[in-house]
Length: 92
Image 1 (cartoon, rainbow, N blue to C red):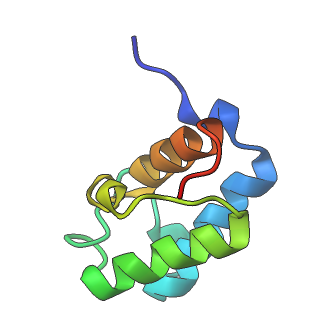
Image 2 (image 1 turned 180 degrees about the vertical axis):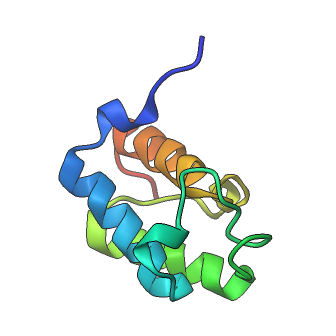
């Protein structure tokens, strides 16, 4: 029943997501894992979460509803939200 959300992202998009998160959270590349919590493991706050959201929208050209922000707690969550919103067309 579980699906691999990375199948809908190109390798370039996946790398871009990682890079955005690493830059915004000021991490070393090896500090970010698929499941490390942005808040608990990387000391992110709500402002950094909004910055991640804004960068993803700008850099990947996808609109993500703010309601989805709560799901974006780690890299896997970000991937799932991006895939869902890429696949559902433009959002107002």
